[in-house]
Amino acid sequence: MTKPPVGGNRTGRKLGQKVKKGKLKASSRRWLERHINDPYVQRAKLEGYRARAAFKLLEIDEKHQILKGARRVIDLGAAPGSWSQIAANVTGSTDEDIRVAAIDFLEMAPLPGVKVLQLDFLDPDAPQKLIEAVGGTPNLVISDMAAPTTGHQKTDHLRTMHLCEVAAHFAVEVLAEGGHFLAKTFQGGTEKELLTMLKQNFRQVVHVKPGSSRAESVEMFLLAKGFKGRRASETRDAEDETVEAEE
Ligand SMILES: C[S@@+](CC[C@H](N)C(=O)[O-])C[C@H]1O[C@@H](n2cnc3c(N)ncnc32)[C@H](O)[C@@H]1O
Image 1 (cartoon, rainbow, N blue to C red):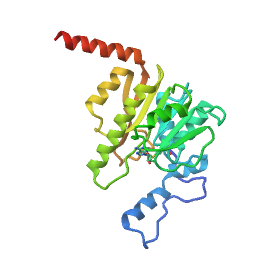
Image 2: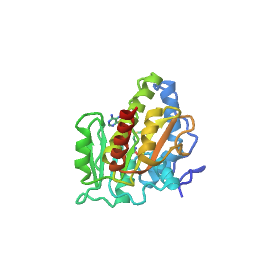
Image 3: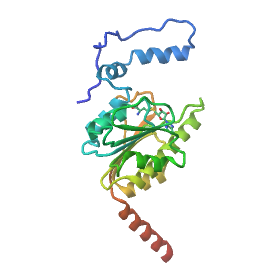
Image 4: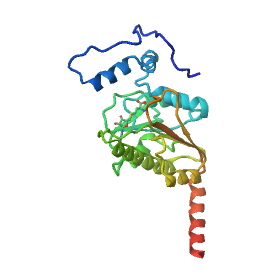
């Protein structure tokens, strides 16, 4: 079970450490203090994960079982790679039989069983390259993409919401029937049209805030489970067009 880490730690580093006042700006010092004292950061180190984000995916999975049965996974905004590590593990992906494709515009150190594309997901070539890289129809699309911060909160939110929307449309294009889609979003940020589109295409759509997602952060995850399949959505589109034509 993914329990929040408690109290001390086994990394040999004490919690509650302070960073000396020096050249760092106060805000950077606060960030660094929070980072080195974060029990999830320490646990990630201990368990060999590249990022504390691993625990968000594991916690969501604990409640919603999205990793069980994952055969091929596309990981959007993957660097430094902890979600890809988990995906490679659950799919049994190897360099000889790749089952995980990851994309990030930042460089990501290679991972066994993961085909890494260093590319902007919004690049028009990205969808096709991802499909080729994963080597078959994926049944899980996960996105932890967050737009680089500009310091203007509203702009940052809008950019990340846009990434979530593009990822959702991509998922509907590529997923196998019964597959799942998970993406980072913001509290109160999911557009009604996006929710409607997901509800039309998936059996269940929920917002999730894992305990390992910092309480002060407005980050949330949007989980769409049980893709109904493209034939179902094409039939619905045709029906919608007929209704419009009849009106
Ligand atoms: C929170 S981090 C992902 C952490 C990752 N899930 C892990 O477990 O290691 C978000 C990532 O999204 C990437 N990203 C943001 N916008 C992107 C885009 N348009 N295309 C590709 N990657 C993007 C960032 O570069 C960043 O590495």
